[in-house]
Length: 122
Image: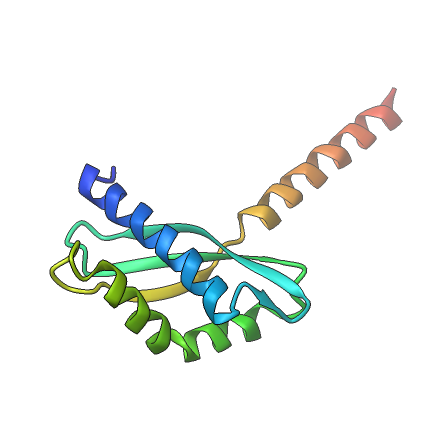
């Protein structure tokens, strides 16, 4: 389903604010790697926000995600103060691991393997 104009506006605002909050709270650097917000998807009723996090060179992304979820109340509190004049109610935040980079790497590896196999046949 396509996102509406208001959903896109709210998602963009949340993404911008969350990036600043992550930097301020020291959550953008963890376990020797970097964490960034890949995207924010929000439901049409604006009550649920799904935050997709990209982990770059983080030793254990699942543990890092759990530590972020443990601090979700702190993130939500600060985010609520930033968007209180834009939204009637604060959306429920859910954090997910964004695996698009891994998916792209996997597809690229498959294409490389196909090219190798074609080269061997000739």
